[in-house]
Length: 69
Image 1 (cartoon, rainbow, N blue to C red):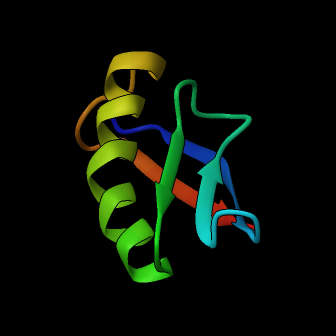
Image 2 (tube, rainbow, N blue to C red; image 1 turned 135 degrees about the vertical axis):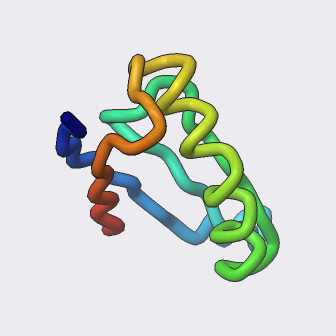
């Protein structure tokens, strides 16, 4: 049986460094920085599953809903 989990990811543009930053109150350890939103998304697709597995105890097959603000 797979479980359903919802997580919020917050993205902001840092004008001082001209980079995008992604953090999450729901995913421990998520702090990503990139030059573009595309680069941020590419990095997030790798890092979020890793962090969910290692920091949140999620298993492959668990349904995940990511909300971006």
